[in-house]
Image 1 (tube, rainbow, N blue to C red):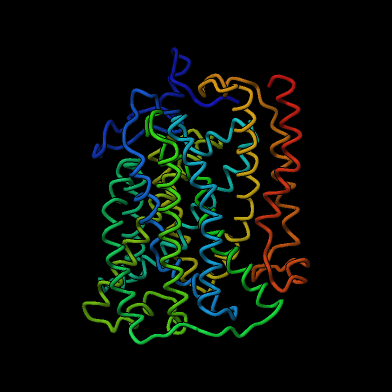
Image 2: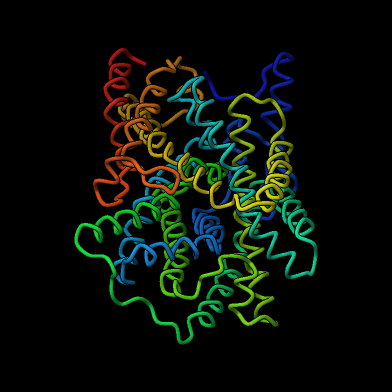
Length: 469
């Protein structure tokens, strides 16, 4: 299965109207981007690797990350040990995201479309998983952001959610350049907001200096805390090259890697460290709780605005990448329409979650489904390395690579095997695998899934390379 290409004749008219279309021409070009999953030609590439720092920094400055950071203390670790676990897990999870992001400049293609090289028509499986996850995360983050906006403006809850979803939907429709420009501005705004929040919230608050768990239980809590941090950073991996696909081929890949790694790592570590430090006061994990912690008034309003803006930043990227995933699956609707669809579907989902205590359960389902990502990363990375060796140093040409017929079953077999191998090692509130229980709650599922995919897929892929494919 080849990637969509530029039309060559009348028969390709329908394809052009869906997968091709208008592209931004330069930084600040905020016209609606109608370009779908068709690769961006070199003649339309622009920008510098430095913009990858801001596009990956701002969307992670959310209260979701702060509240996630409290988990290490809740598991019984002291602040220093928990912070080491968070830093370790975050960096390990950010490395694949940073590495995959460098492919955008080389190919002009998004991450799920590029996965067709390895998966063939089976790319529909990770494509559907990513699209469903993007809609679901839209709802989870929109639930908190919409609540903050409604409380800030004195609106009914549903109005706050509606405005939030409209805002993120508009950004998703405008596309790549609008998102990059927003994240550049929000990097400074949200960094200042969270710095102010930290100064206010942590005034007189002292972190946990002693652990309440010891021995094997402490080791298990350390691993689980690290894995949770890893899962947050790694969750961006299937999106990675979506936000670098307009960078020129000449863009420095090392700079692309380091700007992405620093953006993801610095933001996630900052918000989780705040959660670790203030775990004792982050008891009401809602917009109301944030307002009350800040003492209401102008500072409380500022905090609610920051929460709403952070949700907007994150969800705009969900909608954009979700639109590319939906097209990759084979749904032939325009990219702007697909981006708007994610926001539209997220609205009733938020209302449903708000009507009952279902948000925590829904988030656990998403974390459970997130175990597919390590296997995905392993498969596409092995395929990429095999192609690089086969080229022998020759430049990567996407058209030539995608034109080669690819069997779908090796990648899918490795993908499924990776998830299956990880099940006994999982530790969530929905399910605790027997190995995780024996290891005192240590969750090694992400590592096991990655290794299992490597073990299964590598010999199958090398056999294809030996056969000249």
